[in-house]
Each structure stands twice: as C-alpha cells, then as structure tokens.
Length: 316
Image 1 (cartoon, rainbow, N blue to C red):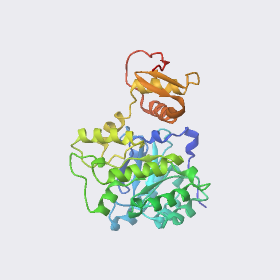
Image 2 (tube, rainbow, N blue to C red):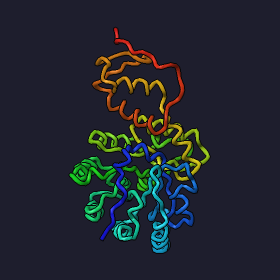
Image 3 (cartoon, rainbow, N blue to C red):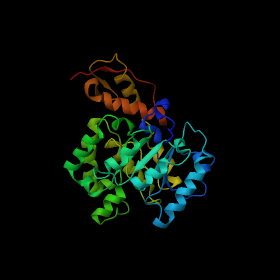
Image 4 (tube, rainbow, N blue to C red):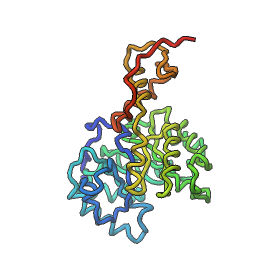
C-alpha cells in the first residue's frame, strides 16, 4: 500500500515558497544532511535527480541510496523536498519506497501527452504534488501545448500541479544550440518559446518556472535574465550550484513602491483608477499582478524606501 505524503496545503503554499530549487544527483552522500537543513541551510527547496544528473549505470545504486536516506528525513516545514523521476517506471519504484511520504512530490521530466497517463495513473491514489517539465519537441508546437493544457485542467490533476517547469537546456539541445555566454535565454530562439508558454498556460491558472542559468561566473547576465523572467511572469529559477541560490532569491525582493501599490490595489478602498508613485493603478487590470507582488513580499521581503505615500485620483 502506498503511503501518503505530508500535505502541502497545510503550509499555506505559494509557488514563491520554492525559491531557487537546487538540483542535485540522487547519489550524493550528503542527502540526509541537506534534506534536514544541517547542510546548505539557505535552501528553500531541493530536487534529488534520478534523471539527467545520473548516468544510466548509477540509477540502481541511487534508488537504493535514496531508499536508505528517506528513513532519516525529519519534518522540515520550511524546506521542500522533491525527487525528479527518470521515467514513469522509476516513479513507480519511488512510490513503493518506505518513507516516500517524507518528500513533498515529484518532478516529471520530458513531460508530454505521450507519457501523461503513465505518470498520472500512478499518482491517483496519492496526494503528492508534481512539477511536470516541458522539454520535448512538442513544447515548440502550439497545438500540442494547448492540448496538454486541456488534459492538465482535468479535475484531480490540476490541483496537484505546483508549477510547470521549462527545461531550457533540453529545448536548446533539440535545436542543436547552446546558450552563448553573456546572452540571456530571451536573446535566443527560446525567448519566443517562453513567451508562447506563458500565454498558453498562465491565463488558465498555471504557474511556470524559469530555466536554469548554466554559467557560474556571469552574475551580471544572470541578474538581467532574472529581471526578464519576472517580466514574463515566471516564478522561481532552478539553481545548478549553491552559489546561485542567494543571487537568484535576492532578485525576488520586492521594490517597496511595487509593494505599496499592490497593497493599495488589494485594499478594497481604493478608487477604480488612481495615481501612485507616478504610475496609473487600475483595480480592474492590476489586481492579479498585485496578488503576485504580495506573495513575493511574504517570501522575500521588500527593499527600504520612503514612507508609504497616499494615492490620489488620477487626473488628466
């Protein structure tokens, strides 16, 4: 009988809580220490990978290693733990591990309509949360993504999806290219793909996360890319090294001016349209943006600025 995981809803979950998840191979010797916060305490979330981070010859030993480590995982309310399943077959083996309820859910790689049922049929009797990764050639196909969206909107499936992940490196590999140094993904063919995924999925209530940035010595381009991630409405960016976590999450600190506008927009007493910080604020069109800003501020705080200003009627 499959055991049930710790329910995320009791944590008042927002996708922003995941921060910058760190990918790490499932055969790391220090998994227990990382999972319990004794090592890398800065992590909000972590993904133990049984897929691309492992060679095929290491999969069996890594699954045994994970099984031994799980029994030592302690409850960690501020740390979210996921396993990236290599395939539906590996997911089945993970679900059968004792103490698997100590992880919060799974990342589903190479996700598309072809393996949709193979993954979700196994998850029906559980309450694990999942993060499907869009990283196959179908991701470039607008019709395929619209069909996948409709499948994911089914009752019992939509509710368990924390967010959709965009697999930038896999998509670049399909195109036979690699992100050049000193360029953001938005300056490559993936820029249009990310925009298309945002418009296909976000209006229907899905959150999407940003692809990894694989250069550790170019923080300037990383910061530029994060600003573009946020401009596209993406939530979170996976880290490939612990040194990236603080750099990514510091970019999520909310500008106080934005926070003040968001609070006013959601306060219920503001006029339909008003002027604040020399910007037009309109309750009918800016409320969803405001909710996202408030969620970000709860997770990352806001920068100091001048005292909270009064708003005024917008005059022309």
